[in-house]
Length: 437
Image (tube, rainbow, N blue to C red; front, top):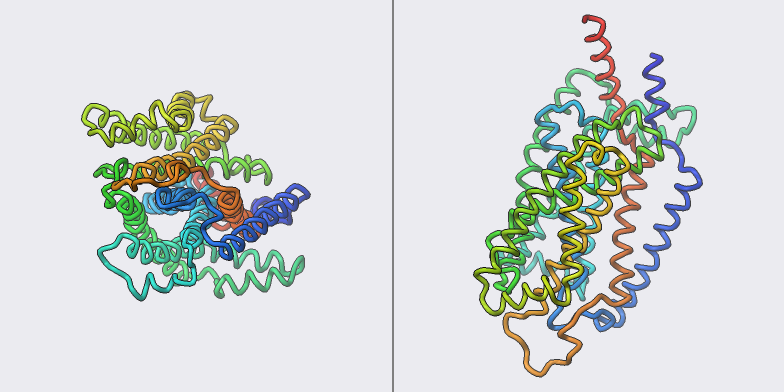
């Protein structure tokens, strides 16, 4: 009973401190500024952006691909860890699920932001063409959102019942809401059986759905026949890149949450060590696909592709390209090979660097290729041949990133970020084993 009370004290959601309030207000302000910029974009049209006939996607699609990639690892890694019954996963799975849900929600919103006429969104359903990967995206993203939500929600039922009792006197309002969310959970054998089966079914479903989502996004690019995208390598390339971005985001958020909520006894160095090894493996795999994508074509590239590669290697995008490859991939691998590099603080710095590199990587996937059109237009203005996001684009994009962080922040505020009931069960089981031994 004493241990259980300690668990509730450590893991039950608590009010934000001064830093938390400032952080939340800052995110809301950034989002409001982004909304104002978006409304202005709707009124004036896409002319306020730097997107033209060449760079017709720009930063919005780069951001969309980043969100889709980040959402992948939360659900897929959690699903695999749940199905393989890895006990060390307990303190990190819920944070991973929260990141995944926030990212895929923002992916859906970002694709609508990219539409110059969001009022015509319904046309994607009414006039859908099954041969178009965009139609598949319209189907798969809502499906993935639902599965991500259920994978987060179902394991929360026992904890909601616990929090209902915990807040009964402290906060009747919260207690009432936790009670409704618990769906009358009592912990009976029949309820546990249904819950376990449901989680297994969702975990089995979300793995192929996640892979399909990444593959469809890869096909959105590779089926255009554009130089830089015309690659059979793109689907596995996107999937491995998603693992890199997602694991790095998970490490970064876990470190911050651990520090703020003082969860060192639950999220230990062991978790960072295992996540560090996982990130190193993901980076190595992604580096391999980058070699296949960029180095091998150097020896076989036709004229158009050679120009594109020169732009990345030594041209306009060279600094950004080598930053992404060296600082965002190679250096993290070298750091993570050593045990000291897999300690919490180095891991946080590595994770943050990889996340930044991953975002810019999506920008490099989208933008340079668009500036080498399949059929160049004659006599176009010089400004069409170059692209860098306008102030409107930056404000809106930063607002979407802030919105993803706000969703994560709110969920962390009101949900037990480490499963209370499961942690209690594992501690009790460990106590019994120690007694028997």
